[in-house]
Length: 400
Image (cartoon, rainbow, N blue to C red; front, side, top):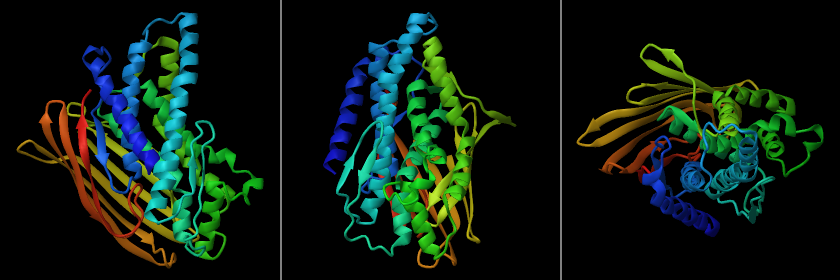
């Protein structure tokens, strides 16, 4: 907890001190930044904190190392490459590790009252050590959720980043670097889980596979099946956009690259595929963003499906910007419904869901208050508590 508090103070100090340079910036306008108060220190809290610190880094980077756009000389190109390796990439790896451990595994550990003996952050090979004397062996559902918590944390980070990009027309190369490393965090298991890893209890996916099988009392998941399901993450267009953006920056010095969308009537749309690692097994998800080009209002629709050992689950969700506007207030809607296995009896499904509103109230042209209030039934929704619980987090958003 003390390390998280120190990280919060550092991120705030870095970003707020950067405001000294804000009015001099000639870069394209950035999306509003946010800082939320979340009693559970969830994956959403971590994602906003990381984006806040990254915004401060962007300001200092633009001042100390100007983008030098259109300077494509060999020496400048080589310099940008090494700067990306030494600074941008190292920062991206550290951000990914922090989200994975503190706000992924750590979030689930705090929810499940698991004693965490130590969490060490290594930008190149993050790992955690969990001491859980009160974590009963038969709590297979909770153990599976704990094992997949790091993967869940980085997936939430990328979801938050996607919505930030869609509020504008371009992607920033430094944000793309963080996004790319977070994407690699779960793609690496396509290649990193070898046959000799099946007894390695320090490997997240090995522990996940073991507890999912124990939950059903039979083998419903193995290395090959898990890798086949994780392969869906290869269809994330923002991962490839991030690679293009980074290469474009190295070659031209331009930090910003306009992403591509499909046209559908008066809307722009972009689909994102990914695999969730739920407590009962891998689940496919299709997220489709619908963007109104003039207003940048977003409607996000989600479809979820899994079939593990003959047990099927379904889910549907939608987030709607500007569901209701009145007297300066902006109200967004967040709605989910699902049919998921029960934690006590995975062969039996239950109907559940979540509903919340996100209220925005402007204090000035550059600052607004932000509050999310809602409720969810027992069930899995990325970044939220597993049990029946209220949804409550708030803070503020601002432009730098």
